[in-house]
Image (cartoon, rainbow, N blue to C red; front, top):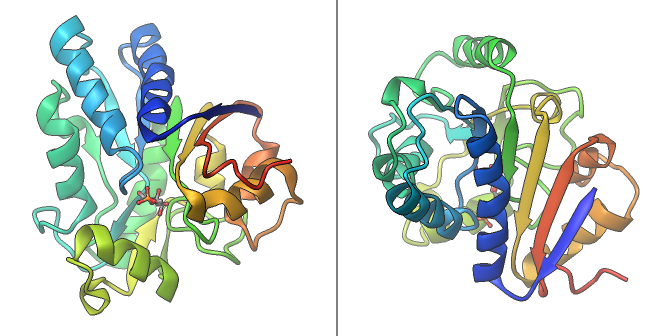
Length: 242
Ligand code: F6R
């Protein structure tokens, strides 16, 4: 595991965009695993700036998002698909038919099976991850098996609370109770993993990821077994590291 500790969110975003852009520049037909949440927003802005200024093209890139709320159509303003259009896809030249987000509005088992098939056919070159304050990656909440593939999950109260802030004007009752997420096994199959964490509320799961024992209580700790992981943290998220 390569650990990069930087001063703040801006520096973490700059470092993360460098790692992502290196993959895109080396392989203009790469398969990118992407994440939503507040962490990647600045990094996505930097990717858009780079696309406009340096012409980095995404016309042959395919993207695969980690997760989607259950019950929301792609066009719903609080869906993760909508978030991705707004924060990244609308600013780069990726083809919309090459964009993939789990289908939150379909029949559950069919949506999960379709996504697993898609991931099997399109190995991910780099998977971007944030981390939940409870250690989740994707929406794989504590207790999720490391062997899991794309599945439906019931969100923990703490996750719904964390996400209400960004997506639902702070109203937890509006946050869906379930989501479809890539499983930990899908994430582990990515050739490279880039995890970015900023803020004090990420310090505990980062400590377990970097220095602790592998445990399903902290799903991110599964990454200890991955051979190519880059972890970028700001000082606050690194504050419990020895
Ligand atoms: C998002 C996702 C989540 C977030 C995590 C951190 O697609 O899968 O695991 O990465 O909840 O969210 P932020 O970045 O908002 O702190």
